[in-house]
Image 1 (cartoon, rainbow, N blue to C red):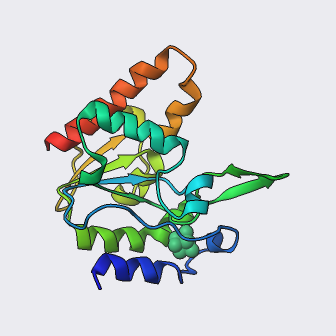
Image 2 (image 1 turned 30 degrees about the vertical axis):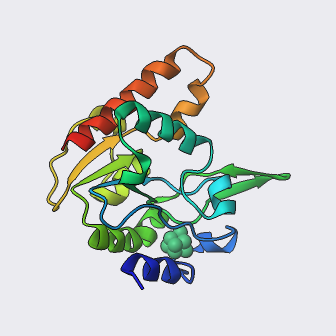
Length: 193
Ligand code: SF4
């Protein structure tokens, strides 16, 4: 059994914070243990929670577009989240995404550390502030720190960029294409490292 398969199985028994109670399941990663680039998102969304796979919902489609523009094959990267259970607020029949608290990010951090130890990527891309907080262990200002290698004491480079879900609300507006290009450019910076 590979280390990642073992981690996936152990993750389903995690009770390190209360988020497991309302979510459907823990959502682990997709990607090869030999990947050199690791992309870290925030948490599973509604679709991901139901399907048990990261980045299969609307934000995942935006990420696919950005990866394609950056010339990166999705199969070449390792995709995971900082927090492995879906945090949401129930409104009627709908489940509305709720940002994970710092306590959730910290409780879930050992899983990300375990993945980093197995995959040993050359570059970690933090998709948004939650991923940045988990990887860097400090608050991150995406607008100020995005798109360049950051000064970190780690065996991998770290690049921060926006989370693809931030682009969803721009979809019907003119700035979507520009923001998608910026996301793709940040991913290309990471890939070039
Ligand atoms: S969110 Fe992370 S720490 Fe919390 S129960 Fe799920 S796997 Fe465990």
